[in-house]
Length: 258
Ligand code: NAP
Image (cartoon, rainbow, N blue to C red; front, side, top):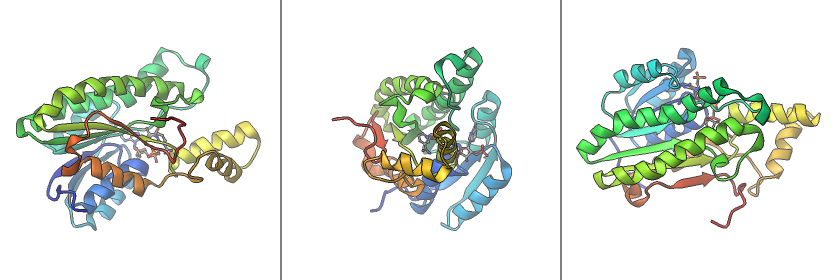
């Protein structure tokens, strides 16, 4: 399917690995030029080199997107973009009684305030041009809480509430904002969650992964490439009537009727 976005420009935050990289690669395959962000220069440059094989322009910007300084740096390099993919690392697991104000502030900075700041900075130009696409990578935890990820549950539902209203305010101007909610995907993040389960249940990591996969109706973890393809579709011309949605990509893991 031709997504109709060849020649457009996308900023992909936290995109050198995992789900962000999957989104960047699917956009590159659709002919979209990229500004790719992550904190660590080496893997960022390697990712950019791989993406250039799709024949698109890729600029990189190493910065921590969870900080105001990092956001300014990224925005200065990115300039005007047609597509924004918001992403950042997820907060650590724990128990409700572990978390104080500083922990919440960190989670809010990364998983709520950073994407809001990027949308606030970038959407005015999209509105002016009458076309834009924003995809926020959130989590299945906004539909059904994951107890040990309380910091993530809290920060991401805050972003979800913001997007619910804002997406409807910008849609009349051709700016389409949606959230993608990953279930467990095979990335560095899932490896660290497997490690946690292995320690809690006294098994090795392979067994922890097998147990987690067995709990998913699809029977396996998700694939970052598949996830990216769905992101690219939400950035397509054809997605213009999908507004303010929270789309689960979880192999059926969250048990909901709708
Ligand atoms: P990942 O494989 O660990 O990749 C994270 C990517 O983001 C890396 O490129 C990393 O590069 C970059 N990054 C992290 N923090 C950053 C920051 N503050 N500023 C800029 N770049 C940053 O993670 P993932 O599995 O793709 O997960 C992406 C998001 O989806 C996370 O928020 C995660 O919690 C959420 N999620 C993941 C799953 C899953 O199963 N994978 C499920 C639900 C939700 P640097 O470290 O070099 O910065």
